[in-house]
Image (cartoon, rainbow, N blue to C red):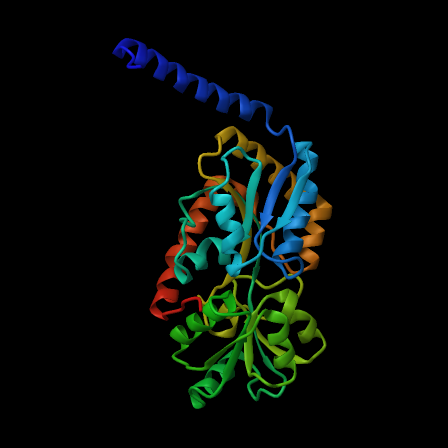
Length: 329
């Protein structure tokens, strides 16, 4: 049946109004059932426990459970892609960070856009990487380490959690700035790489405080610098790269969460309020600090701040990754 133009326009207008009304009604009543937060990595590691700390506290504000679902594979791409394809109703969320929403966009050919196919909700936590080396490394500070690497071009080895990991990419960044050259040795995670560093099988790593600090405290490895503007609260004796003589070599691994593109702004607002509430909770702050995380300021917790921060990270890291030809195998 062919509708007269006036009837068609009335029908189309009514449909648009009904759709808009439905979205508003959804936002006003949201949430009415449990929310799924996709953590795109297996249980354990770093990402999973941080996501659980957030999810446990968000239910206080949302009055609904936030259930963690681990959807691992392809360095986080499978779980992240699932959220990109999910209904934009606020019931399927993406928890990720530098790997999933910055580096993977340059390392992999993805069926989604890491920047434009998601609605940012909030930055949650971050940590600066630490430059460490085996105990028998002759260098005693960062300048001496750089000098040693220059004296042994291509002979030293850096372990990382894998190809395209932040440790790997930061190692490339380090070489670009210092004019040094060393071999990259990818592992299936930071833990086995650290085991070989402690055993002296590799020369150095650039990795997370949760991995490096226990071994530094045990005097099993040497620490040279924190790749940030300020020292770590958990290790105030380790200098920053600025203090150690290599200003500007900053590498921050961070965690945040997103909703699918098109999620109503009121829903995003409620989710953001839940994160802000979580980060204001002293017990949450203490749990994050205890494992070496920094907490973003209140100004950094807005959706707009996350969008700007993610864009800036892409603009910083994609040229480094692409110039080095880093691609997933």
